[in-house]
Length: 329
Ligand code: AVI
Image (cartoon, rainbow, N blue to C red; front, side):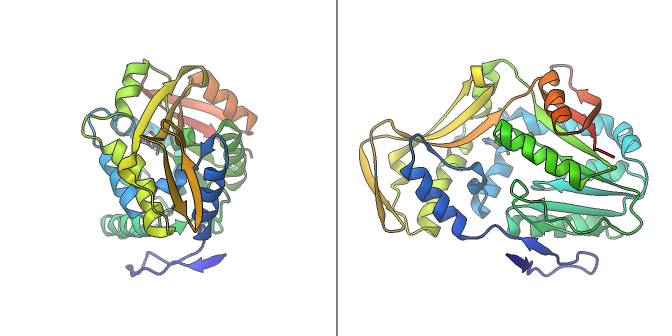
């Protein structure tokens, strides 16, 4: 469905037709998840307004190192990365959250022509884009509300843009299954033809570091996970007893991923959209996978999708990596 984003914005921040994810998807996907075994729901439903705000808090947590590690890499290598991007580029950011990272790039770039942030959370994106526009009044900012894992409803490349460069930070690609990640990269390769993708990925590391990052002491990650049930209660005529579930997150080493689940504390019944479901004690709804990568594994995936890997920037502890991937010509 093509809709027009309704926001009040300054002149350069134009409204765009966007592929807004149909509201009905959450209901259908939640019902399908509850009917299936094992029960699994896409992590994209975390990001309602409250979930997006909780995720911003996660990024500030002492245990959640990826955001800090990636910001430090961008700050340290901005000039080199800007050299790869070149002058007069159009930057497309996938999953643009609070837009902190892009500022580091924009500050280093030689006359960026346009910035196109894509995100599933319309209200959050509009607010972030507006704030960014204030800091860069001369830059054309074109926010697009889209589930970029399903389709890339990108506008035509900006007139005067030398090349289109994608920016996919935060290791959000790790929230896709390997098959979905490959499909996304193939699609991105087509959209960025002749340009490149700057991709940030979290690296395989000591499981205790990963465990702490997804089980923070303040319980913000738990609140983020449990908000999914609150969201269902708010939006889906559901009656989840949120206190009847507990956040569970652990590293699955053979699959190189952190798994998040919501585990039922007791045997219980609940209703969603008029349908009744039972949870046994200890039964879970699997809410997220966060895949971790090796340098070689990521390069292999990129090559499979048609990209040509270029330079990669990583920190001395090997926590996080930014990959420069040349898109097909
Ligand atoms: C957005 N994404 C990359 C985060 C991650 O680490 O997988 C989401 C998250 N889940 C729990 N904490 C953060």
